[in-house]
Amino acid sequence: MLTSDLRQLTGKVQQAATVGFPRITAADGVRLSAHTIKLNTSESMPVVIVPSGWTPYGWALFEYTYLQLALRGYHVLAYTPRGIGLTTQMPGGGYVDSPFTSGGTIDVAGPLDWSDASTAIDYAQQYFNPSRVAFLGESYGSGISQLVAAHDKDKRVDAVVALSTWGNLATALYQNDTRHLAAVTALINFTGGPLDRKFDEATQQILSDFMRGQGMESVVEWCTERAPSSYAAATNDRNVPTYFSNTWHETLFPVNQVLEHFDKLAVPKHLNLWIGDHAAPEGAGLTIPFSGPNLPVDEAFAWLDHHVLGADNGVPDWSPVTSHIMFSYQTRTDPKTGKNVITKPGIREPRSSWADVTTSTERWYLTGSAPKSSDGVLGADPATGWNRKFAPGQLTDATAVDAVITIGQAEWNGSPKTYSPDKFDRQYLGVWTSTPLTAARRIRGVPQLSLTVRSTADAATLVAYLFDVSPDNTARIITHEPLTLTDLTRGQDKSATWDLQAAGYDVPQEHRLMLVVGTRDQLYSDADTDGDTDNSTTTISSPAKSAAHLTLPLG
Image (cartoon, rainbow, N blue to C red; front, side, top):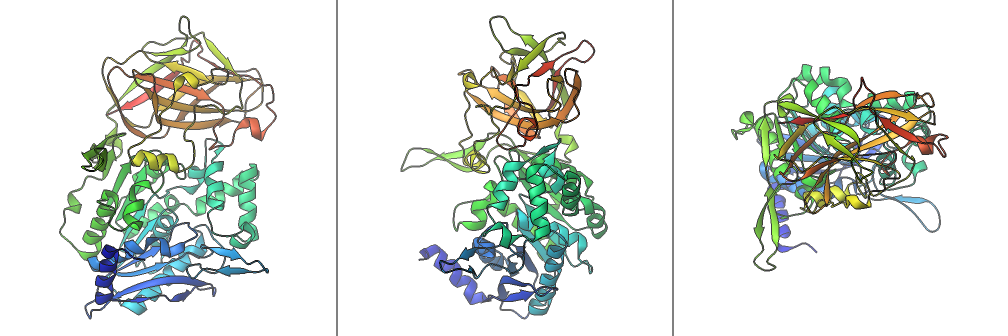
């Protein structure tokens, strides 16, 4: 049953518009489940087309979004991309699709999805006769939105909103020779039906190869075809205004590949970076009526209002990049419970470009063990000649997250995960900690780690974590990133340098920085499970001419 507020909102839309539930026929005959809200006006108004996310509920999940858009003066066409949506096996055999499930099999934002999105534009032009066309998408729908903007043969897309999106699908899922297994597993499990009904044989083979770590060149080629960054030149040529919204601790599409894509675009553009994980910032604002102010969605709508409706709302004055700094919130006291309630994000820093986020860097050198401790030290001076050995292949309490998406949702809601560094098992980890900081550090940008690795196996995975440790010896994660070295010679040193994921984080005075290096995290593939590294040993060292160090970006 609808709440009174939602009944009132729905009633307003029904008075101003006609609601429909058509099926749109794709070029190859596949039938796409769709939902329309057509404003009752003779004036030509813009349309916002919304491909649904990767969800069993298809377009139905975002009904609140469509109502809001209609009341702002847009026709709305929402549809479920091919293959997406709930498919239920019946007790007597056979399958039944829900009303919001589309036919066909999932193309994973491939050429068939680009074509379908253009077909949706055809339908919108015939049904609405719109003045302009915009696309808004979250997650899967955001990738499709960017891709149709780059590929529609008639160049009909006038603006894009891409929420919790990707730039390069290949590096989002396979970076530093490390596969993001938990992300792909979560996606496979959230299509709404059995794998053999949701994907054709060719896509099933790609997914199987990815999960087993075989034929990765073909997998990368397949992913690269589905990367908006591959078509940045086309987007630039069409000058499509594009709004991005992503999170620092994204577990499906990590932030660095979005930053690289954003930098390639020479169009009107804006990037918001938020605390949290996939879909956490905008989720409630898109799906839960009257859940309170939601800046990510409010600003997305403002982007459309300016670039599509022509509203004079200050959008051209926005800085291209705005960073929400971890973990800052604005709160109020709930008079009923006496508890603090988050009202909106805290510190937000505007910058003229991503490059301007970092204004300087600082090196922290890794040293050997401190006196009366198995841990090393992060210090200001180079330290060489030491090594740290540990056994690979074990999960520890030093993890990026406990579960995909959910931990980041808690971050957004004001409850970031707290770690206990004393529980980090040094048998399977290398740990380096600074002394208490005499001045706060404003981490802004992409940290980088350089060290030397030796293994008794032919391959090794390293996962680097950077923590903020408070005086009470509890910690919060700042960032992390894995690296797999597949070309090791047993017993020989190999230099390794890799970027961690970008961060916007204030480390207070008197807190300590802690760098932890392990060999396994539940999010990723690792050399221990992919190959023969039983009973092997991983050694991290700092040779005389290559002092191990962590480079922190500051701003």
